[in-house]
Amino acid sequence: MAIGDEDDRPKRKLGHEIGQDIALLSVAELGERIDLLRAEIARLEAARDAKQASRSAADQFFRR
Image (cartoon, rainbow, N blue to C red; front, side):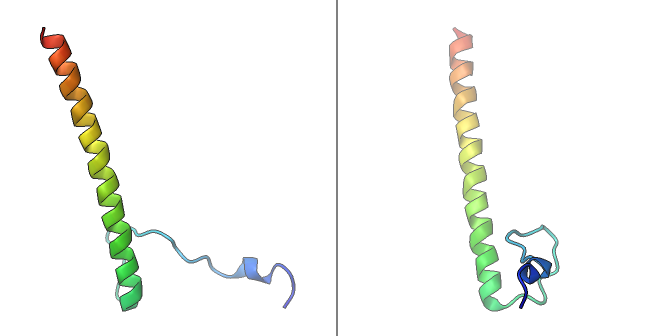
């Protein structure tokens, strides 16, 4: 095997696209995707909560 042959191989996707065909994924791969999406949901909820807290603080400040 020559150097650089590894670069010609298709790269495995590390993410998940909404609506992506999942028919060919194994049970383990589905579990990985679920874990990935749960982590993303937690990240989005944390960002939302931080923005809500910031807005609430601003609302309180400017109401006075």
